[in-house]
Figure (tube, rainbow, N blue to C red):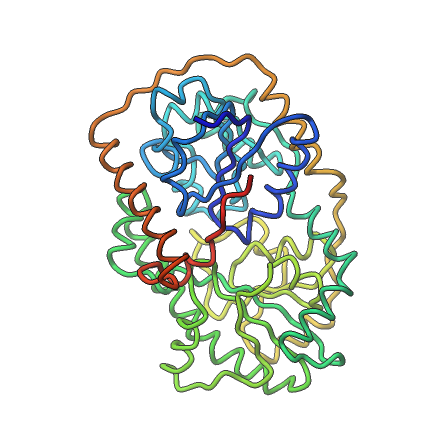
Length: 404
């Protein structure tokens, strides 16, 4: 059994790893030992560590993965912490992603970026004293990438053959639901998602995705000297997007780059405009002074709406892009030393008195956990030896070696 102070779990490498590595470094400077593991690829390694603090990417229901893996007696004295990487929630996601179990409501510590998310957690039953409002660490890292944008600019342009004089526009698209199978939707419903909204969500996302393929094709034609970088949702592969263009009888424009390489932060740093379907990357970009917009070809359903959707430009036609170019960038927020503040909060939790939690495990959960460990072991073997055979293309993006 390996003793560690902090066991960090990462769901999406691209979204979380930079911040988690920074937290790891800050805590190590305070004398703490840390390990970073993947929720999807390292389940077979969880039991090798005896951690004082387990830091999750989210906390919804202790009956589901990955929290279920730690509902065992050996972890009953651990601190459970959630960094809550998704906080700008639509109305439909608020009900789906609120803490649902008493175990999470009573025993989890939560990071909140703003007061409204703290209120959301409190309304969901979480203890006020266990919630700390600090800020979004991604904004701090984004500002740092902006300061180094000249380095990224040269590197990315050289790799993708983009002319130095070409304006760059970045579109991280959030159409994951458009690719959901019936089985995937049924699984979402089983986890608590509204059944009517779930199917409507897929239909709406698919309609918008189809409209986007025509939108971006025409936009590229209107601005032939500019470069449009389109990035699929983390769970969706580049190949799936290519197929969607093909099915719609379209060819990928020569001045469009379809890629998942490099981080969203790096692309935002070197782009003049950031646009999306409903990705929070647009809001993040505006927080650091970038121009942004949402592509809204059809009226956005009430259940998909968020407070910030109406605070950015919404367009539906390629000709509307001129309005975005002529707009002013967002006001730069004071991000300060957010990561340092989060690490100090984590260290305070680490230094607090541990208490024993009542944890009950059952045979069914143990069997499911065993199957998840076996699946993770196969995934690692496949990624290392079989070129990812049997592992979804979107999921492959989240593979990484344990970070010690």
